[in-house]
Every structure is written in structure tokens, then in C-alpha cells.
Length: 117
Image 1 (cartoon, rainbow, N blue to C red):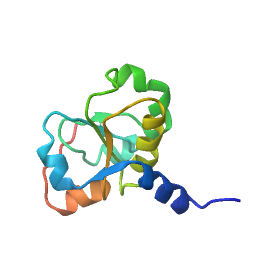
Image 2 (cartoon, rainbow, N blue to C red):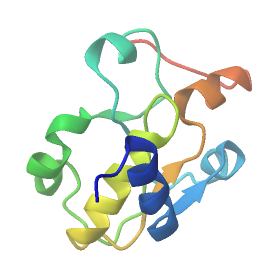
Image 3 (cartoon, one colour):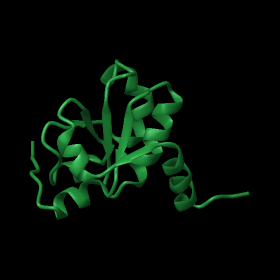
Image 4 (cartoon, rainbow, N blue to C red):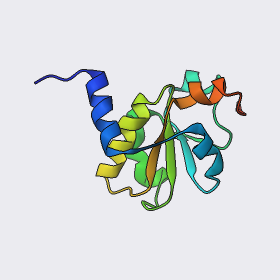
């Protein structure tokens, strides 16, 4: 049976941990990973976040996230791609990966700090 993108995201969200923006703010030891395209990241991102485009995450995960037990928070624009990515990383053995609910749009809408590089 074919599934829609929304169904795939919902299934991924049932297998991963989502954290809200307030929890992300409190996670000083977590590596933040921005999964958005270059053009989106150029408009702003969470301060200190690594940029790893969603389309290359799995191929480069070992290089940018070598410790599979370290805390990682993934985010995208709205939370769908990051949920799918968190699910994939868990399948690769990452034990402490989360997806930020609402993505960058929720962070920005809350008036939280952003950076441009």
C-alpha cells in the first residue's frame, strides 16, 4: 500500500522523540543539526547549529556525528524532515537523537535568537 508523505512522517514520529523549543533551549550539550537547504539556512538558523542538508545526512553522519551516543537535535523548517532523519539515524545506531517539533518556523515565531553566517 502506498503511503503519503504525511503518513511517513507520522510513522517516524511514533518511533522517535520530539522535543519542543523550550527543551532545545535547555539542552546546552546537544549538537544542533540544521537539515534545511542552503538557501533556507542563509535566511537564518539556530546559533551554533551544524548544517547538513537532509539529502546527505545518512551518507555523512559518521563524519559529522561520530559519537552515536551523544545528544543530537535535528531540525528543518517545520519538523517533518527532521522526524524522518531522526528515524533514519536511529536505524543507523544513534541512541540519543531527537527532532525539534515545529522546526525553525516555531523557533523563529517564538522570537528566539537566530544567526546568519
